[in-house]
Length: 289
Image 1 (cartoon, rainbow, N blue to C red):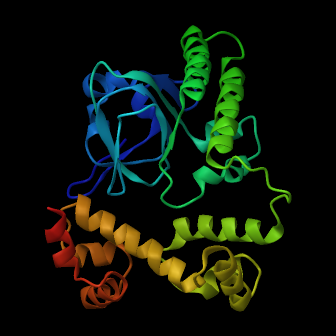
Image 2 (cartoon, rainbow, N blue to C red):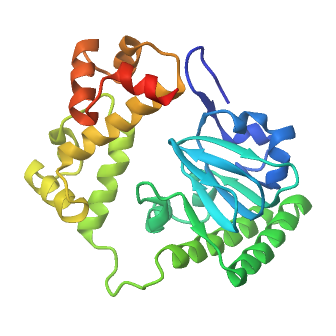
């Protein structure tokens, strides 16, 4: 866990002090008293499944407000900026885990197969009464396993977690596809992973095409086929998202934001931001207040 002056707090899974390979499960009602940092805008380095049974409040993820008014699953992905405001009597479970924890039993890329973890702007899935009861049943078993800490608990928790993720995938994407993930989709997933890692230093499609051992034209073809826009547009969208985050959640000056995002000058950043949002950084920040 770390926080630098003028920047967004960055929270890692060790904030829960569990000492068991970056997995934690608990009640959402404990957040105000035990984990108040989750109430402030922060960037997480772990996945969070907020499993709501009954609660009052809201979760804000990258500027999108989700009311905690019905049984639902809210997914917070690593890198998102989030704040959670919830009442102390809330019922349900909060499940936090890292990719590293899950991958100790499953392949490193298994999480990429869950479409709700890879689609943009997917934060919540509502549960009907039957599904809410099913989730409650499984998460209570998970919590018991977590607290008892018996032999092999880590593997059991990973198995439960895999069951929950598979169930969530069915809720989000109930129709079973007739074809398996093909090479095109795999290339696109790899591109998005590379983009999250390198968008500050590398802002041109040629870099990513080179990393993927494909041509820039083919990368553009994939992006247009599956996302409807060019690879360059996806790169600009990712940079713009981070710019919005920094302008909204930090006190960094426009020049400092430009430097943080790897722009050669503040004026270049202002021009870029204007072309991609239709407003200036100053106006955007003012309208968020």
